[in-house]
Image 1 (cartoon, helix red, strand yellow):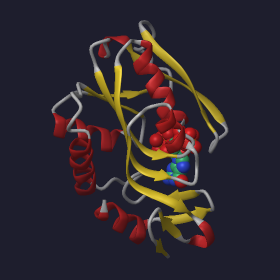
Image 2: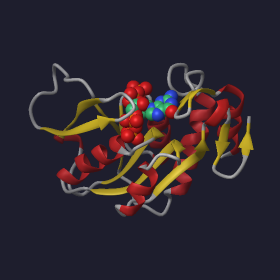
Image 3: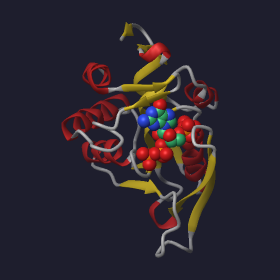
Image 4: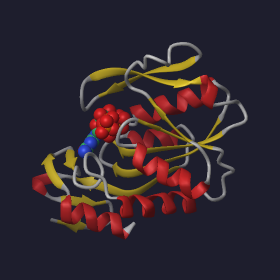
Amino acid sequence: MQLLKNKVMQEGIVLSDNVLKVDSFLNHQMDPVLMKEVGREFSRRFSHEPITKILTIESSGIAPAIMTALELEVPMIFARKHKSLTLRDHILVEKVYSFTKQETNEITVSKKFLSSDDHVLIIDDFLANGEAAFGLARIVEQIGAKVAGIGIVIEKSFQPGGRLLQEAGYQVESLVRIAALDNGCVTFAEEVIS
Ligand code: G4P
């Protein structure tokens, strides 16, 4: 997706060999025009699937997920990473380990909002090791629903998440794929840009 690539080139900051900072449009300040296009692109890429729900994880997944949900006119649910006061019973829970942060979160979704009839599109902002996406897929499968696919805004293809999810049989659509973050430069999967 060229618009997103341009944004990464113009505003992305390479923090280390494996972390890209994009807080000006995705992880802190959010760009609604870009998110609208992201939603359109995901809905186009998964148009062959009878999607009934979008599922993401708080917090940065919410913007691309809600825009996709708006485009497809289906509800969007976000998994919580922190225990909610009002969400205690009838919940689906999965453990998600983050290699980047070296911590485990218990993610929760109310059983009220997913059923075995659902075809769920999982959306997230970043894909690194795939732990968050696998955790969300396990939540969907716990209730007997179907994972219709996984949509990622930025995949770091030098980390194993994308390959592992595909090997597990999921359709993964990443809007940009980053092959390397060496020497302060972003290398996209097809080309080199500094
Ligand atoms: P994984 O799910 O693919 O295994 O990823 P990982 O545990 O490594 O990611 C943990 C958090 O770090 C996630 O956000 C993820 O989006 C973010 N992250 C991973 N790599 C990068 C990166 O290169 N750049 C940026 N900007 N973020 C990255 P989170 O903690 O859930 O944050 P948020 O959604 O609350 O903003």
